[in-house]
Image 1 (cartoon, helix red, strand yellow):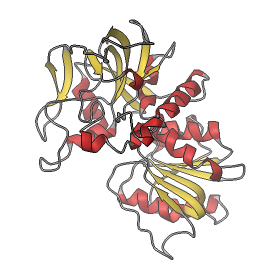
Image 2 (cartoon, one colour):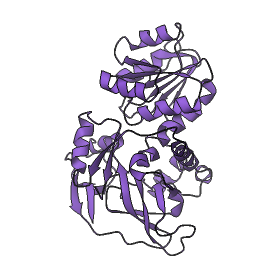
Image 3 (tube, one colour):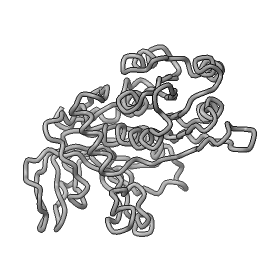
Image 4 (tube, one colour):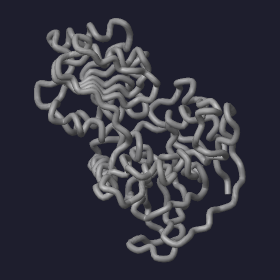
Amino acid sequence: MKALQYVEIGQPPRVVDIPKPVVGPGQVLLKVTAAGVCHSDEFVMSLPEEQYTYGLPLTLGHEGAGIVEELGEGVEHLSVGDAVAVYGPWGCGRCHMCAQGKENYCVNAAAEGIKPPGLGSPGSMAEYMLIDDPRHLVPLGDLDPVKNVSLTDAGLTPYHAIKNSLPKLGAGTTAVVIGTGGLGHVGIQLIKALSGAVVIALDVNDEKLALATRVGADHAILSDANAVEAIKNLTGGLGADAVFDFVGVQPTVDTAIAAAAAEADVTIVGIGGGVAKVAFGGIGYDVAVRTPYWGSRGELIEVLDLARRGQVEVEVEVYSLDDGPKAYEALHAGAVRGRAVIVPSH
């Protein structure tokens, strides 16, 4: 079968032919219908050899959807032909966190060498994908896999981040979204669907801000040296009640900290390497700073329910598996509008 793999440190991914996976007891084989392209992949592929721990060759893709092709011995409550989405942050399934569906915070995963698909285990950017356990599959039903596969990360991650801050986002409050790309443009929709907050969106050009406005942002301003002043002007000098940084580079983290009102939440979701400087007098009083990771299985079910109701949708650009390397070129150039999705059958 064809797969898009990261094969050599520092080199772009390439399409290769590898054996079709063989399903074992308790496992599920999917025929992949869609796989999302994410900045996390680019981050992994940018690591120097001494910091790279994901194994080579690595089949990319931690956002996946597919049709059940084959069931391993002992698998119940699934049928061949079922449409499913893949819950990506795999855990041990036994610890206290996993028992709550929070496998993203599994306490045993690192020690037992359990890694998510596309981030250590073979991912979804292939014609077929092997799932280690049926609990890592969520029914997709009649949702279009191409339009909704990115919700498994680009929806789940902002949903988890925003849900934690909902107590701060009642009527009359303000939320700031920094970065309106793959995660941010979904985050704007989630804030509007779940809260009473006014949304201020920040990004680096008018095209990205136009997308932010189209998906529901109340204000769209350039993410530059004047952004904090603009946020303060829009909030009567107080700042925002919650700030979600979906970029995470140093300038955006600095903006997030400076824009936060007293008792606000600052949530750094992007993995751009920025560091939050927290000190008495250097940050608003009683501001909480969070760095969440992905979300729970239950939250993924909730996100897909929002999609079924038409309350959230992902802007997607479609690539074939053969053109997968071009998707990462476009991502690196900042040329992807919303989320790139690889469709093996395209």
